[in-house]
Length: 493
Image (tube, rainbow, N blue to C red; front, side, top):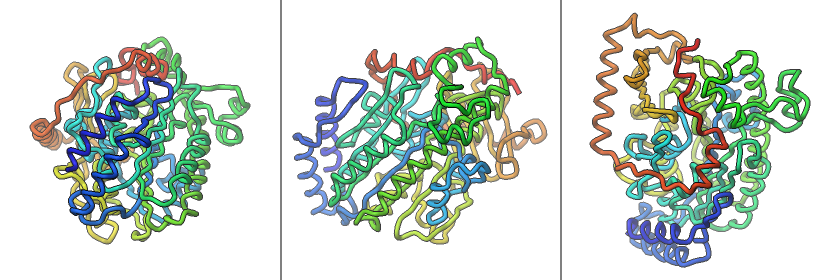
């Protein structure tokens, strides 16, 4: 029944989606797909097959922070006071101290959140120029929610989360906004306005809402008063330095511009201002959610797809490495059933889907790579996390494995770089490579990583090339997703 519903809805969405890349919106809300969706969901609820006998239970808001590294939040040790609203949210909810993304860029990272599968299994990602989409055989969180009677909607601000890459599948409606360059993106204020308006229109029904914020992604250009508060003095005036434009990124990645530390420090201060502005707007969204009649039945999850590098390992931006500045992400949860808690055990994005399903009363798909984190919030130790990092936007994939106290990073043979080994608990910023000092452990970790990748390959979904509209390709290029080899893959410490 669930598979039938997925096929009907997915086909209708594809045949009726807008061809306007700048503003794609599914029209399923008012069409045949909505009728079929409601009828099939009701039938599934009556038979207790789709959602464990508890249809139409809770609602879920998933807040996705594009390009926000965990250590910028005060609740994760950030010292600049950027995130008072997120810190307050964490104080009253669950905080996972060692949550990891499974990929260093948006498409594969978010696909793991949406599917509960590791990147080699879900198949979305690839690298330039061969980007791949999420296969139709992989169930998404939006499809799960819809099968249990929830209305599904996403507000996204980058093309990777839209229809051509498969991550729009299962959403009844999609408010997607992306632009000709990365200097004219929709800011957090407008994104929150859209989210609040949608919530007000759907006051008496369960829902799954994704709210995606692009502000912390380059270009870094925080609005007043956040620029004045957090930028370097020479950049505090509106209209002064705006760093991370498409031309900046391409110049850096093609070696036509140097990674000057003074410039990157100025860029990081602007990035801090963007995060502070983002936090203020998220505070407004959280206040709106708290005033709703269904607040006690609503799960709120906040995470980032990946982080950002500012010369931590000789590089800049993201997509190019698997070090902690890119994979260590915030993961915060609130629900009426959960007491405040901090969980130190390592967890991953593949744990998000089963956790949200358990809290909302939805039935998660079988065969996931992750596990529900709810037991760990009631005193149990979470199951061992599949601590895999995988991917590289700019070339052949990198792979990393976190096991016990150690983390291994392996590079493509063509790079000429030796594997690296870190003690991630004692050296969370991964500055001391122990591979030469502990060769036996390095070899053991390499064998474990190879075995894991081999087992995932046996269960993987066939990757399919994304069928990209030329206009979308041009817009991705203008956002800086082009430019050849990454100078950060040289070891410029």
